[in-house]
Length: 367
Image 1 (cartoon, one colour):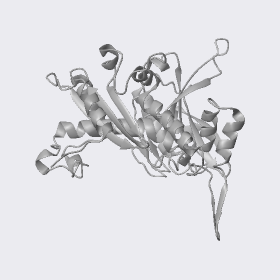
Image 2: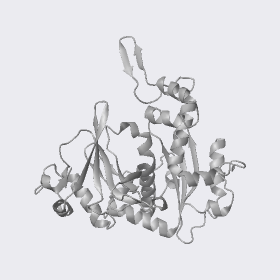
Image 3: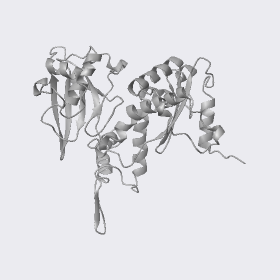
Image 4: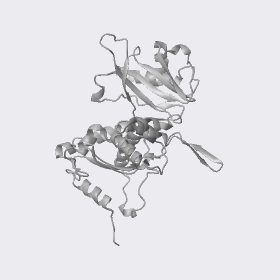
């Protein structure tokens, strides 16, 4: 049987093979090749966000025209459709918009610093799947990246300590004492049975940890951003205070960590992000979306805020707040809450996740 590989597959295989000591795992290193895709890339493009991005590279009038052409009512016979977000395929500039929006997603996945290292200087850009030097190549776990339309391939290389730390963080949030995660693992069926990946416990946990970091932390927030009124989203608030008025807080950054939940509830990790970009900022609390405006702070929010304060002493109860972003027809409303001492005490002990837990009182927060 003759096996024919496409040029892109040959380049990817050659790029992986040319990495520095890629097959050397004598000290417990791990290699992870992640294959995924941007779900509904075309349908989930936010036209408002797209307009702001286009204004960075084209004239404002052209940017308004390109987004307005997609924000229209389409009629066919007795049917009509209002295209409020997502691009209409077939427009002359649709391919350009998709490529540009895909570039933004690439930067979100890689981060600006790593993307610059992989691209190289503008005067002498790197060739595909190559770096300027070995030091630049080995300075980050992401070693290679490739995207074809909406399908991406990421190649990671973790040291033994990094792999152990990531797996431990994953198992802390998703305990698996009976090794049940191995059931239904998405293994390739196109290869012969003796050539398929062995479902070893360490490999299975490592791959799921890598996928969770990519899927939750990087991509879903952008290409699912227009759909936040259906699914919830949350982020930690960071900001600064003017030197002459410490009572005023200016929000500079919203960090969206790995999270899970439904349109009614959201779950956040208790560990705060640790990044050099945040070292000069102070934590201000967190913000989350909800489908409807509520007259009070939900007991789930009180419990979440209290548990984060317990695990992170840098969160001051007098300076950190909870902001709810409620979607209403045609707009959204923001409401800020601060926990009272009684609310912190109750929330840190509450384990009931129902809508009306025992002991919940309106005096647990201030609006």
